[in-house]
Image (cartoon, rainbow, N blue to C red; front, side, top):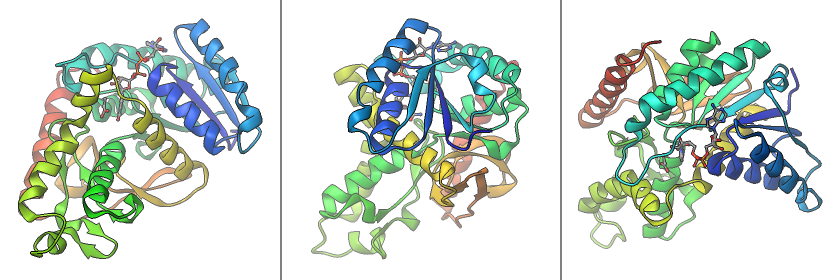
Length: 314
Ligand SMILES: NC(=O)C1=CN([C@@H]2O[C@H](COP(=O)(O)OP(=O)(O)OC[C@H]3O[C@@H](n4cnc5c(N)ncnc54)[C@H](O)[C@@H]3O)[C@@H](O)[C@H]2O)C=CC1
Ligand SMILES: CC(=O)C(=O)O
C-alpha cells in the first residue's frame, strides 16, 4: 500500500473541491480521479496539473480506473446524486445506494485494503452500506458525518463572539441531516463553556439564541442549495481535514460518522460522534456524558438511521 496515495471516486463538485483543496494544501503525493464520466475525470486531472507550479509540493495527479485502487491508502467516495431544491438528504437513499453498491463492488475486485471515506449522501447510511458490502474493518470505513456541520457551527459562533473559529470547540452530533443536534453541554469558546458565556448579561450571545443557532446550522445547506444548487467548498475542506488526520496519523478528534459497537448504548449503526482519527481510521469513539435532552436527540437520530437501513436490501 502506498502511504500517500488517495483515490477520489466521483469528480463532480464535491470530489473536485476536495481535490483542489488537497492540491492547495499538499495533502497527498499521488491523487487518482475516477468517474463514470471518464472525459470529466480526464479533464479535471489536466486542469489540476496546471496548478502544480503554484502548489506547496509535487503531486502526481491523473485520471485512472479501479485497478488504481489496489495500493491506495484512502479512497474517498463523492459520487452520487445531489439533493434538488426541496429534497432532504434521505430522499437520495435508494438512488445513491445503487451507485454505492456498484462502486464498492469495483473497489473490492481491485483488492483494496485501505481506508474508505464517504461523502455521498445520506452519508451515515452510505457509510454503513460501504462497510457492509466492502468486508473491511468497521474502523476503516468512515463517513464525513457532521465534520462540515461542526465547522458551520464553529463559524457561526465565532462570528457572534468575534473570535477565531479555531478557538471554538463545539460539536454537531447525530445524523448529517435533519435530526442532527448541537452538544451544547460540551461547547467551549477557548476554555469557557458557551452556556456560561450565554448566561452573562453583557454577553454577545444570549442563552435563548442557542436554539436558533442550532437551527441555522442545520438548515444552512438548504439555503445554499436554493442559492446555487449544491454545496461543495465546505465539504471539500472537511474531507481534506479528515484525510490529513489519517495520512499524518494525527489522533485528531473529529465528528466523523463512526460505527457504534455499544457506545452510547447503540450498535450496528454509523452515526457522527466525536472520534479519534489516525492512520488506522477511527481509533476510538469518544464517549461524552450527554445531558438527557442531548442523549434523547442522539437516540432519535440513530432510530432514523436504522429505520432507513432496514429499507435496504444489503
Ligand atoms: N457529506 C456531506 O457533508 C456532503 C455531501 N454531499 C453529497 O456529495 C454527493 C456528490 O455531490 P456533487 O459532487 O455536488 O454532485 P455532482 O453531480 O457534481 O457529481 C457527482 C459525480 O458522481 C459521478 N458518478 C455518478 N455515478 C457514478 C458511478 N457509479 N461511478 C463513478 N462516478 C459516478 C458523476 O458522473 C458526477 O461527476 C451528493 O450525494 C451530495 O449530496 C454534498 C455536500 C456535502
Ligand atoms: C449537501 C450537504 O449535505 C451539506 O452541504 O450539508
